[in-house]
Amino acid sequence: MDTEPFRTLYSSNVFYLGHSAPSPGATGSDALIQPLRNAYPAHASDEIEGINAWLTIYPSGIQLQLVGSRRPIVYWFPIQNLYITAAMKCVNFLNPGGQVERSTFIRLTEPEASKSSQGPLFTFICKLNRGDDLQCYTFLTKNDETALNLVDTLKNAFTNKAGHSERTIPDKVSLISLDALYVPRHETRPLTL
Image (tube, rainbow, N blue to C red; front, side):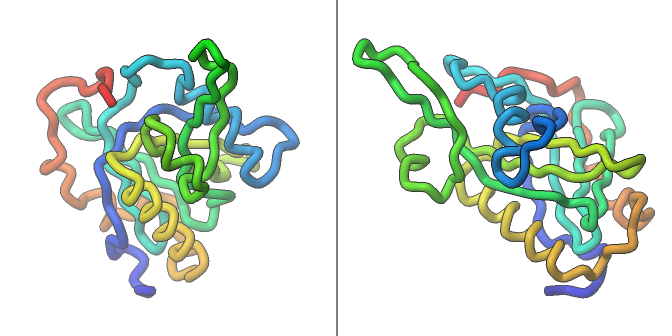
């Protein structure tokens, strides 16, 4: 693993679906379930609302760039604030009449995930800079491989600890390729799966 805290480890175009606080008292994967339900409507037909974004993982943190305006909005999540990350998929269980009886979110690596027609999700929970509050961020990725690569890269960056001191977005990171991400109109739109 690279020890340069501002070297790009992985970058991907994603759809940002939203964020919310994990359920109080929930730990581990259970902490992801309610935020995933809030961000991803399990009973949706084929349209999901999202914001076009780029996620870039550095040894020192995660940069989220929302690219729907002249100058993209940039968020920085220091790597040491990471709580949990996962690649997930919504699985709907049907009753004998073919209607959705219940839905759940499972890890993308579970066998049942390959049977689901729902899109792959990348999610992470991190501590906010201004306190001990946790927030879960959810993204729809273009394919399973991207979601799994984001998780693996983020876990490796966290374990490496190369950039565990960068609490604010470094200038080197915030100036990288922002002009290249210009999208001429606001890019909040339905995504057809």
